[in-house]
Length: 430
Image 1 (cartoon, one colour):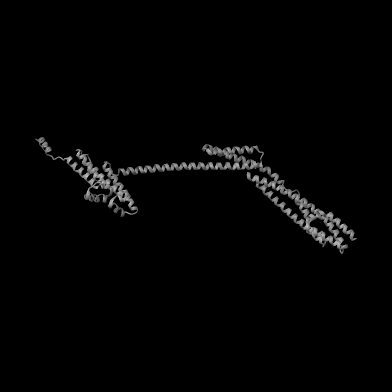
Image 2 (cartoon, rainbow, N blue to C red):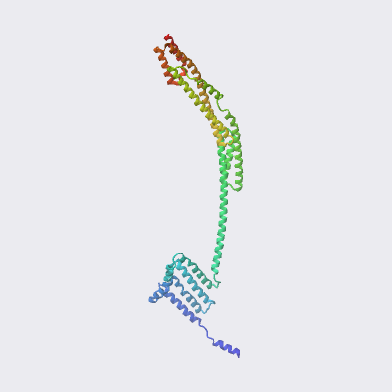
């Protein structure tokens, strides 16, 4: 009896006509879609519906008929998908979230409501609204897919964190590679600079010692080492750095040896016994010329000129000697350029000392001639004392004075001619 009552109640339970509901939903969805599409001729009713939907909500209003049409079509086919209320709810929530994104990113497409909302959210606050809008849209998608809430957000954030971490690690690795590369290039530049300095010194030494085959061979080997630096690796760079140190030590040793060889040549510079000679000549020129005649005063002027020339010659000699002493001190720690400069200065001082020696020899001759002129002047003074009233004697005195003032030291070589003239005048005066 109980089983019969159960069957009776199940036969009398009311059933839902899915086809009828599906037909109504499908018709409603299609009619709604037709009314909001501006291209269809729907008359005043379509304009009113469009203003109420797309005019206020924007382009997302075109998505409202979709759930009605889809669900109506499924019901019409007598299919009732499980969870369709959840899917429909999630779809609407996603539409709301997307509408919020449009309000921030594209207010003109979000309708009148969206433009009004965007106008009230000016500045950075308006842009910040996009974040919760995106979250709302993801919640709608998660509801449609039956996912737990915030799954998309947490997944995206986790991927973003991982991406940032990978990017950070890649950036640090790239920075380390660039740093190592920069350090390597700096080391290459340092080695290249050291080899360039060695090549420069070798060129200076080769110019100083052109017949040295050793220097030529070294220079060619250094040039090859510099060429190999263009495509060098770390192992090759170590070898090049060791070679640069070896070349530098060899060049410095060669330079030091040549500097030691140059020291005796520097010490040999000078004019032998120049100091005592100068003191002796200064003593010879220290006594003035006797007499008050015009020739005596002019001859004394020549003596003073010789004394000035002696002083100038001593100054030149002392200057060259000081330079020689400084050059010898500088040779204790000298490079190739310094050695070349010291060699050039040595040659220049040798020429200067030769000139000083020649000038000293000429001055020594003039000092000897001055002594002969002193005798001539004594004879003239005696002639003036005896025959000073004669015109020819006075003319001789004046002519000798004029010649001495005009020609200076050059007249000293003409003492014999003036002595003959003095004898002639003296003979006629007697």
